[in-house]
Length: 154
Image 1: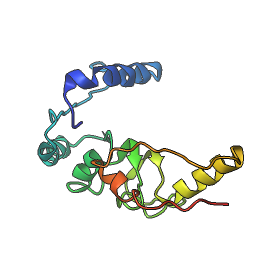
Image 2: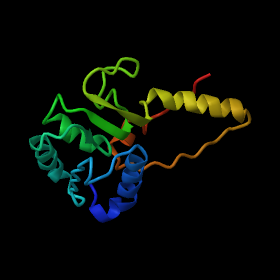
Image 3: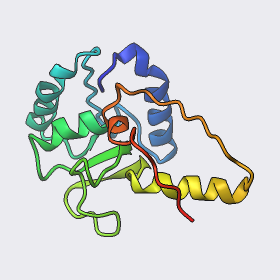
Image 4: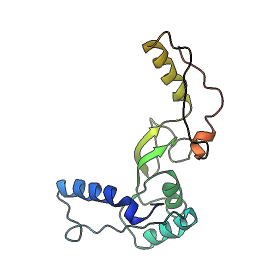
């Protein structure tokens, strides 16, 4: 994870609770190796390499930067991304229909094409809509590619 252990504690608890419901007990029948970059992105490659050296069975990467770091050091260890952004353009999968490779997970954003479709659905639901405000963080890499005009689907 990019952040600190303290920042991730609620997620860690939820993750381990979910594992426990499936019959896994951390420290009994399962070992979980956590790594935290403490907010320093440049630490991700070394942390990913450390996990690969441990010969883990699977890596759960929190998001795109974490997954990229693991991809750079292993093409065989399964990588689960619980929250990816634009997995095709990020190079994680060949396509959504046939991803291939060693990465799986969920995405909150399948790519820029979906925005026009979303706006088209909104226009159908609110036909009198004439102005729409969108609040995005321009510093987020995945947002920069979407800051231009968004075509509205029919």
